[in-house]
Length: 278
Ligand SMILES: NC(=O)c1ccc[n+]([C@@H]2O[C@H](COP(=O)([O-])OP(=O)(O)OC[C@H]3O[C@@H](n4cnc5c(N)ncnc54)[C@H](O)[C@@H]3O)[C@@H](O)[C@H]2O)c1
Image (cartoon, rainbow, N blue to C red; front, side, top):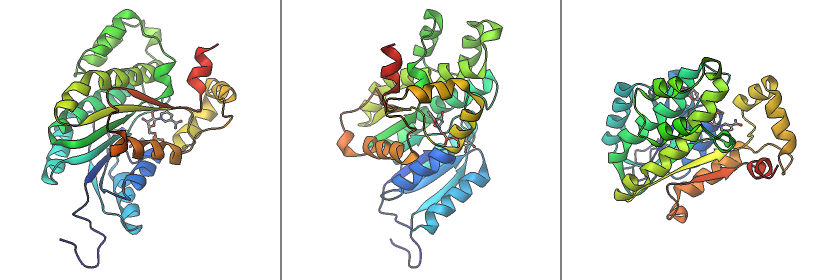
């Protein structure tokens, strides 16, 4: 039932957007044109202000506070989504940059968190639902050792971080390594889980952005000579925009992408291909 004087749209399907940072807001805005949106973040103020922003623009949005690394918090999120009748789209955007935290925290937020969220929300997926996990170009520029590769192909659990750390020399347990491993792990997660999602009539896919102009990306540029070098090698000779990522998320969430599952979509201006070809 439409409520007079509000922009509530109970007839619209639900999009759950995890992460209310730069890219998360861009994705929520785009999905909010045709979905009710649940904006989820560990930072309550960020989630609230993103939901207000969407409502001020005529959208139908609510905020949920959730730490995706904690199973009790993710279970509460699943109850919230279940109470709204399940979801049509899950956009898992939240992630930490290589410089944002230590090895363990980055793997927890970027890999264990998305594994907990996708596992908890899968039973609430319906025919035509989709999960889109934001990975990174970093997943395409990293080759793990055979033992780390084997670990990343297994289901992710609370011990995953310790098991991976045990395979690395102490000096290799850096933020940059955690970022590459966790994003590589997200691609493996989508490949592995596609069958379970398919049984629900749903799809799961990762999206790997290259260099994208975001507040997080700008900080990385200041701190990382490697990133400036990558910029110089991008065939399209510019960063991508958050709108260009939102375009692809919108497509992947739509029925036009109805046969895309268990794979990764690179949106990097051609950079990974250039790096591979030497
Ligand atoms: N900017 C780029 O060039 C680029 C390139 C490739 C991939 N990415 C990926 O894009 C994604 C989002 O980037 P962004 O610019 O929006 O980042 P951002 O730092 O602006 O936002 C990340 C959000 O995640 C939230 N978060 C952190 N830990 C959390 C937790 N435990 N539970 C719930 N929420 C948590 C933060 O509070 C924050 O709001 C990341 O996964 C990043 O790796 C970005």
